Length: 268
Image (cartoon, rainbow, N blue to C red):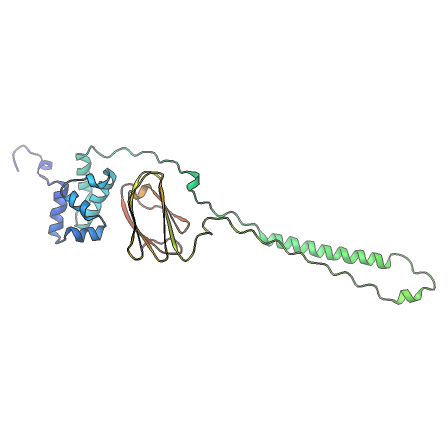
């Protein structure tokens, strides 16, 4: 170390530190890319201290963290070095409001059919009782005239059978969740609080999406078996899986890898 230089002047660059750690771990760029899902051209560029292919500071920090963990380095000093060399971490911006059109409506409260059934039964019993009472008044309301014994011996007419009423069938629910197919996995991703890099594959490994999702934009993916997601800047993403919102997808600037199948949301 030369006289007068600080320790920071002698430390390797971010890309050089990642490259040395990878070589020391006996890994190739292709192996690191397969493990982290950071594309090979981006991984090569970062090792050359070229962060222009990352798509912004947020994604650069996420890639640095991911690559550092893959080669056994503590990512925080490297992220701090990146912030020091690129003007520091920006102040967080307030979250953008959601459009009401993008909200998935919750299930409406179902009517109390038990109470309706009890009320219908009470009404039927009351109607039958009223009918029997009215027929009894018509049959024996006046005195029998003398000498008309033939009519007196005849049995009273049978009461009219009441017709029971059935409660109306409930209307089908207009819930968006109820309309989703249960034998498929359906994922909706919305860049709610900022832009985010999205990668999505189906169960066969087919690439469905690989690119930047700008703030306010949404994408929907469907597959019969499974969908694998990689979310950059996961804290800015609103995620619905099979009609249910997934809470705490990740932190701002973090890169999350998730897998979902039909049924209740369950990260792989």
